[in-house]
Image (cartoon, rainbow, N blue to C red; front, side, top):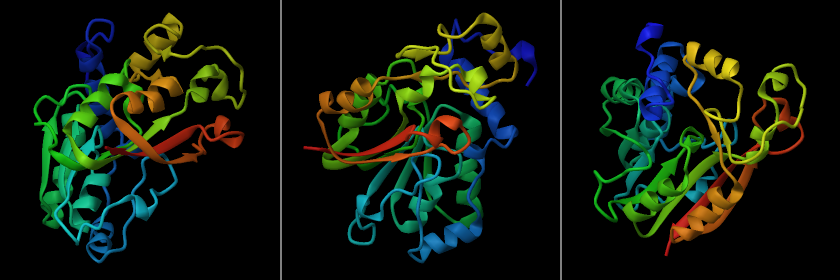
Length: 267
């Protein structure tokens, strides 16, 4: 993609992050590389796992028994050919929803290759108006809400499209990750610089932002725990499970769990 075709994030953040994630697919970002045919086959045989955070697998007891009854699953902002194909191979009826058409193509690539049925829908995770109320039994939301400036509509929409008794499994970046100077983090130094909420539109220097845009990096936002967890409660979800993970590629994770996942139920 030519630099001249990169949308201005100040004018249209959605268009910018969509183009950035499309570019990440072509750059083989780790979150865009589809699962193998061998992984899909193991999932068909009952041997499977997925992640919501960088490393730690979601506990198997967090999932319903897909073989016991039909389960409608929404992979929310979770394309890239990773979670959706595994869940489909395990027996779920899967819809994957994402902003990036190139990411969605990764799921369809696996579906075609391995004979899976996966419905793909393109859109903004904050607006699920294309789905009716109580359309899904389970929502799987990998660590992706750091790419929207306001996470509260994501929880509201997730709660709306979940059936009563349905579950939301969500990963997110903890706010502690964003308080440090990102340039110094790359040097292994933890220097407190930013406050929460954090925005790469407003919190970083113009030169750093220009660098991110030139490299077609998606722009991130750091949300408070009040918004990440309290926001789920306000949306009518009850948190019944929680764990933390450490993003090993960054020094913050050496000292504290900088990623987390929740299991919530709609009462």
